[in-house]
Image 1 (tube, helix red, strand yellow):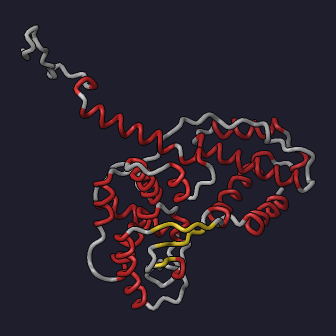
Image 2 (cartoon, helix red, strand yellow):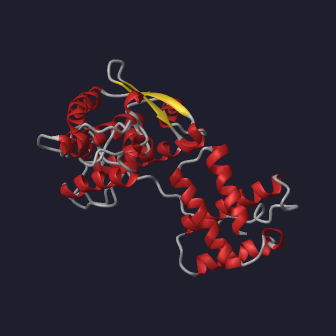
Image 3 (tube, one colour):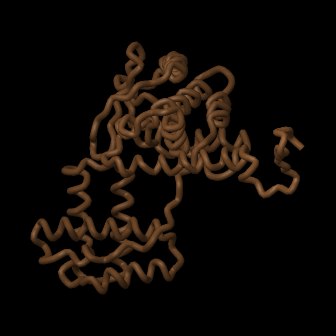
Length: 306
């Protein structure tokens, strides 16, 4: 099994061009499966795969994690079947565990602005942190997309940035004026650091800022503002999309900006926006509140309020 997993991993890296983070996830999922079934790919059937899924759920793993592992296994056997190593895909007809549909968390406009303004002071780190936060919110980037940016990917003059998304798909997205100003300030500090790496965002050692480093920046300032719940880079991406939708942006435009291959992925923000509107309704409309103190004046027969 180990040999086949390594061939599949090489296929992902060379032919599919997936990110290192995705490769690690696939490897971890498949190694977990291999240790569980302890058999060669040609001896594994649908019952084995179902048993693995059931065991994962029985052990108390999150259903999202189990579903992701099943997806990894399905892709692995699909590759082996296409390459002729096995005669059929034993995971093809195994159903994913039912997952409750959770709406993505997003910040209010005020909270987003507070977060973006939190980095204070002079020097490389405050300038970098502010540019990171501004660009995440201004352009709705994934954390891997932001950490993967190089200096020549951002066009300060035209206010554009070139993104390499999932599967090495490239897209050009606009950058807001506040993010451009933050990037200009940061670039001055970056030059003073004399980092030789081509990466746009550097750590204090002068090498590329990692995904984990970006997450630490976001979490650091969210905690400083005592924001409740789990706040991370993806929260700013969700906030970017949600705020565009609330202000009337077309769903197709948001899809292009986010780099979603399918419109159905972007449509979750319509549900989120409806939830937002319902919250406003519940807080503002007197008929929505179960409050005995709310009294509606009724007109009498002469048309006067009593």
